[in-house]
Amino acid sequence: MLIIGIGNELEALTIPVFQVVRKITGPVLLVTGLYFIGWIKVRGLFTERLLNYRSYIDHLSGNTKAFALGVLLSLAFCPTMFFVFFGLLTPLMLNTAGYGLALPFLFSIGTIIPVLLFLGLAFGMGLDQKVLKRSKKIGRVIQVIAGIVLVIIGVNDIILYWTLS
Image (cartoon, rainbow, N blue to C red):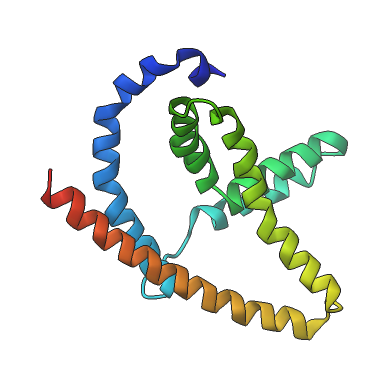
């Protein structure tokens, strides 16, 4: 609500920030892609450390426990969604006339469709151990393909934003 309230004034203030972010994005995409491929190993990730706090949540009860567990798991399994939603989608929403306010809704639909498709296929096939083992193998292949795509995009961004500006 604060970002919407500030409106277009925010755009003029963020242009220098976006120039720096674009220079950082290339190397981040490159490292992320190499991590997805498996060439970079990282020990003690944020997710692993965050899940250690689950023992504190186990002492809560009722709605408080459900809320705390939801917050913990959403941070642990999807910390990049904050950046994607508020860092990329919200400025796009503010700069898009007409259908800009529909973008968060479309974003949420786009993030849930793969989950629903997987669940539908899994339940349609019987959701047995074979399906789960196959999905892990397919997931690994998709992860490597995504890593390769991220490496290509990262190298492109590095060349584009580090040599032209």
